[in-house]
Image (tube, rainbow, N blue to C red; front, side, top):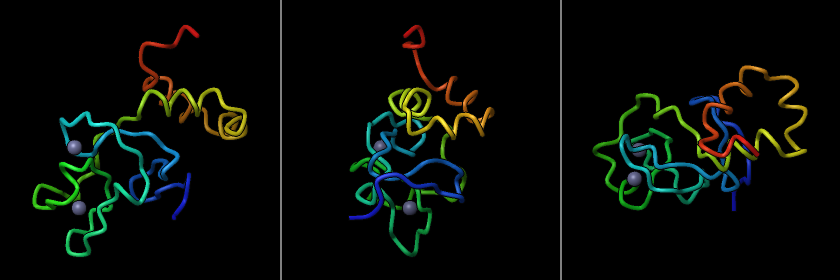
Amino acid sequence: MGWSIGYDPRWKRDIGYGVPAFCDQPGCDEEIDRGLGFKCDDEECGCGKFYCEAHLYDTRPHTHAAPPKREHPSWAEHVLTDESWARWRAENPEGVAYMGTQRGGRADG
Ligand SMILES: [Zn+2]
Ligand SMILES: [Zn+2]
């Protein structure tokens, strides 16, 4: 059934069904995950991005431009606080700073 968490070097972000995310269609705030079930695997399209059900199957609006750069607040929170990401945090200060901006309104913790 694919990977739970991985890394997409093309769009430089975390992917997998363990990664909560928003639809890659600009302007769509539908919550999905970056698992295979939401990935565009249309060979002619080849965008490799992740979409909600409403935007996944009609590939005409898909582009090969970089997806909107944003992360789901739950994912940012996980990356910034979970033990399993401690080493990543130590090695990626820029990533930590970026995730901090994606965390949403729950930064007080
Ligand atoms: Zn596509
Ligand atoms: Zn959508």
